[in-house]
Length: 255
Image 1 (spheres, rainbow, N blue to C red):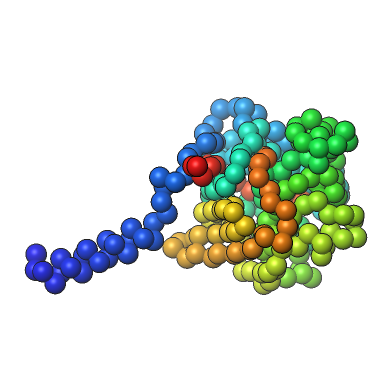
Image 2: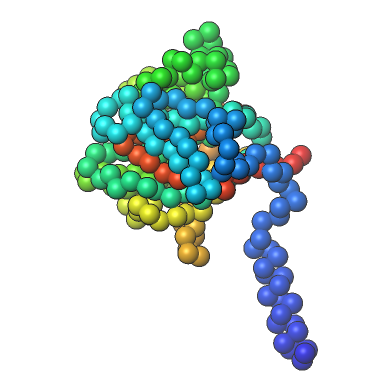
């Protein structure tokens, strides 16, 4: 090989090494097998929700009735995660619902408020959320929240981040919002599969959706809010939503 060609190759390899994340700094701490008994790894809130393994992934479906509170659902990891974390999964939207506003939410490191009514371990209060009103979460939990795959003809499709809890119901919309709010996001159509990476590292929260080599990245600085340091991961489906989650993995950053 000529010296010029060899130099060019080494340069490309150097850039590739810089672009690749340093896997040595992350430890795999959870991996969903996509088969067997899903309840070994997850628990669900929502009387009308269904969960099953299908095609090597987890198919999660909320109740069928738009604008009905009992048709909401949340799927939680039984395991909790500490410190800086990275969440990865392949996401495929399965329904075609467009008539009513509806949102998919990723809850990051959720805990209760540490009170008698809202114990730190949210599993102890899960019976209170058999009907998963949104306010039961944003008033009674410490968590980060990422909205995506939003629907509805009269609202823009957006990706947004929030920090719970809200002081009250009226303050939820503005008091928990982490800027910026990304509007008119033309992603997550039914049948399309995206590789999702959500990274919470220090005061930075990043949500990336990759499909066919195209990266769509959404970033937030959370330093204006108290830090979220430990807790469970949740997948919220508002009414009439269904999605497949494959290759679901959790990483914690090594000390």
